[in-house]
Image (cartoon, rainbow, N blue to C red):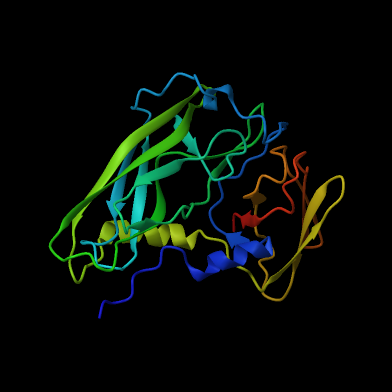
Length: 285
């Protein structure tokens, strides 16, 4: 019997529909007076915009295990290597377009239609907060071979990765790259240490509920997330920022007020009918 496959999407991800979690990580948060709407995407994302030359971002598919095992889900990382001064975007970019991966799968193969996203950097600009990635980043997904896959077969999977890439001067252009992953099938597989180490880093950044904080959402002309400390709460969680995955709020600056340990984050709701926000609060400590 095959050993259980390593999970790409950890159980804590099921907590996201509860709207908010407190996440204690190193923060990329900064503040600046900016104002814009999530809907005001840059012209570079529109059809007809000039394409990137391909040197701004390099993409590759990296397998989490040494072989395809019939019926066993495998973690697969889309590795994005950004040239200096260039960046791509998170699930809710703030202003921009998120990275996507479109598979060309043989019959019987399956792939997750979403990524396990690392926490992005928040960059204030004149047109709004952007949620972006720089340097080397890993976006993980899962690929599952068919249960009747015969051992010894070499299977090459193909996909198309697309993104919007921008430089520090807000020069943006759409980019894409064809990527492939070729492995032989076997009855057993061993983890690829380097890739699995990157997966664990991304898993560690996923939202999780903290019993030390009570979280409440109040809706009105402005939406306020109130964090009330309980026993065991960090008295100084550092800078805080609310990441909304549904773009239910604008990317205007968020106002943070602290009173006697209670933290209130106020954001401006968007104009579209997108319902309640769904996401997490990120704390720097």
